[in-house]
Structures are given as C-alpha cells and as structure tokens.
Length: 448
Length: 123
Image (cartoon, rainbow over all chains, first blue to last red):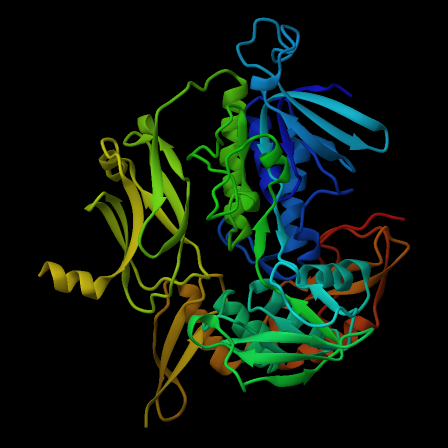
C-alpha cells in the first residue's frame, strides 16, 4: 500500500464517502481511513426510511442510501482502509522534514500533512496534500446531561440500543422510558414497539418537540405513545437494574417544579438528548472550533483555519438530514482536490456571526472574492420558536443586506439561506455581517 | 355540515401542516398548507386509507451479521403493520443476501414486496 495521497478522508460515513467520491472524480488520489470494518457510518443501523429526499428525490432506508455512495466510491476508484483508527494529524506548518516531505511530488508547491494511524498491522504513517475530517458526532450521555440517581444497568443512549436491536439482534429491555424527543428517540420508540417492547412514554425537557414533526406522527401518534413536554427526569431509581425513573415538570427557566414529581416504573431508560460533533483529532491538530456548533470554524468551501484541511458533515454542525451531510461532503471533497492540485490561493475573509435569535450558523466565514461571483449558502438554527411568518436577514451592522421570508422557524429544523450571486454581491463591502431572524409582523409594523 | 381536519404530512422531512376541509359526507373539498403535490396525495390517502412504509429486520442464516434490514418498497396499510411484523418474524433468509432482494412477495396480499435494504455476505 502506498502512503502518499492527494486527499485523505477520515471517516467513511455519508460525509466522508461523498467527499472521497468528489475528490477522486476531480482527479485526486484519494484514501478513506475508517475505524469500522465497513463503510456507511451510522447509516447501516438506521434501517428506517427518510433518507435521500433531497439528493435522490426518494424516501430510502439508511442502509440503501449508504449503499449508493459505497458503490459510487468503488466505481470512482476511491481506496479504503478499514479497521484503522486515525490517531493524530500533523499539519504542514509543524512538519519540518524537507524536502522529500513536500507533497510526495518533486517540485510540488503543496506541502504535506502527516496522519498517524493504527490497525492490526501496527503503526501507520500516511502523507497527504489535503485532508477531509468527516468524523461525525457522538450521542450525549447520562453524565453529560447530569442525570441524578443510582447507577443501575439499563440506561442507554438511543443509538446504542438502535445498534443492539437492528444489527446485533437483541432487546436490552421490556419497559422503556425515553428521555428526549429527538429523531433517534422517536424512531427507537416505534422500533421497540414493533419488536414487542412497551414504550411507556417519551419525555422532553423543552416546551417543544426537538425532532421532526413527521416522526411525531409516524413514530409516536401511530403507536399511541404519549409525549410529555416540559418534563424531565429528576432521578433514576434501582439497585442492579433500573426499577423506575422519577419525572418532574419543568417550569420557568427549565427549573423543576417542586411537588410535580411522579414515579414511572420501567426497566430501561433511553437517552435521546442530542448529538455532539466529534472533534478530538481536530482539537489536537490546532483546528479552531466554534463553541456554538461544537465543530470547526469553516468557510464556504468547508476549509478550516489550517491550509489543506477541510471538514464536513456532523463533525461540523449537527444536520437534520443526511442529504445535506452528503452535500457538505461533496463541497469539502471538491475543494480538497483543488487544494491538492495547487489551485487554492490565500484569501481575505468576511466573518459571519449569528445575530439575534440565531443559535449558530455555518459557514462562519466566507471568502471576500466569492461574495458576488458565486452563490453563497448559509445553514442556521434559530434559538427560539417562530410559529408565524418570520424573516431571515443578512445584516451589516444595522443595515439589512438581504432578507428572506419563512412560514415558520423552529430550533429543531435547520434553516437554509441561499444568496444568489447578485444578492451575495452586497456582502462584498460589508465588514460586520450577522444573520438574524425576526418576527415579520413586528417588523412590518415598524417600517410602515 | 362541513368540518376541518389538521394533518402533518409525513411524506418528506419538511412535515407540512395540512388543513383539509371536508363536506358533510366526509369527502375532501379543500387541502391547504402543503408546499408540494405529495401533501395532496398524503391528505387524500391519510383520510381514506392510511399507509406507512414499514422498515424492520429479518433473521439471516450463515451471514456475517445475524439480521438483515428490510423494507416495504411502497407504503402498506397502517392497520396491517402488526400482522406483517408477525409474518416477517417467521422468516429466516440465507446468506449471501443482496440489496433489493425480495424477502417476502406480496406480503399479506397487500400488493407490496418486502425487500432487503442492504447486502449481507457469508460468515
């Protein structure tokens, strides 16, 4: 096996596969490093449908969606290294071994990034001109949401149970309570019910559903599984195995309401309390992370602050739909290949900040030279619910550069704001850019 | 007597909130709130003959994995889902399995095939 590549992708999930396909198609010698023994990331265990509506205009199960990308990668000639764990990234700036380390090609202007990895053959050192991080995300665990109580068996994250039930073939309990109304939690409520378990209820701390509404209908309503909003767990009870959970209503400021405690007997608690971008490798390499997304600060090409390194998918920000993860992968892969070919020049950036009512936005910065000539897309989440019409605005200080109406906006659903090349032109001379969301009625009232 | 019924479309992740107006006989006179034609289709079938896509697993004999994910390639009647699950519980397929392979043809006379949604190699 060769150890010199144009583009190395870490992670063979939907973002990584898309990035590798696109990089290879652009002519780059491409390798994917994957710690699992097969490609697809989380998709093989997501046996439910709902994948592919944007890219394929179809409603596919996860494994089938993944298989299209696996076939495409194989056809394109992407090299894959399975059962291999990337341990460390050494960006070129820290790499002083010259000149044979310069990109593996004599006379190449693009320096080398080194990746160390391990697998059953031992220790590996790989070299690449460009790198795409597609390391995905992890589930929030019991300790991360600080659930008090005893520490019995029977407390799992929803994704862990999804793997047990859908891949390994066993049921980890009989009577379930699910904490969190995220999509994985609701999907598992349906799955467990279909497999004969009892799902007593799904409880959600926030006053609104955090997953997609279609999943409320087809996963909870269809099976008469109750959803309790503004409710959380104040205690897990049981010695060896979960015996019950104590639920409590959440009031003002999400604080528990004294006296509203209720004991719910169950043997298993599933946690669907959100996902966190996985960026241990990125952090060690000195990549700047955005505390609001938990992922690297990226530009519209999915490039991070270190030249030659790109990131895509749920390691950048948590997406609602895998289709957008794949699309971000395409962008990262294409630009990684361009970088490896020496086509990328240093550039000036315009910073993009999340403004009023916006929790986070990607990209966090855009090339000044791209404002105008090319269309620019922002993906953002609101920090509160807008049940009625609202407007998503691109601001320069107090001036509105562009705005788009939305029928509604919910924290659970990512908003996409696409500026065509003409509208993006307005960004060219801006220096204090933020994205805000505002109630439309109020604003109309003010201006008239 | 006319009435209104609110539905959330499940045909795509958008989840449009549909309002259907019904006449005294329960026939739909108006559908609003949809952003595409799938919403119209969904509202029409949801009131007459509600259907869902079923995804589950079947046992695999001799495979690298003990289970194979399967799905109904078209939505099946909602009230038949439990029965279909029971039927699929009886099935064991032999490895190797290829994606798209029919696991149960015309399941319970619904006119819908249950097919494998991934391939499984031999152990």
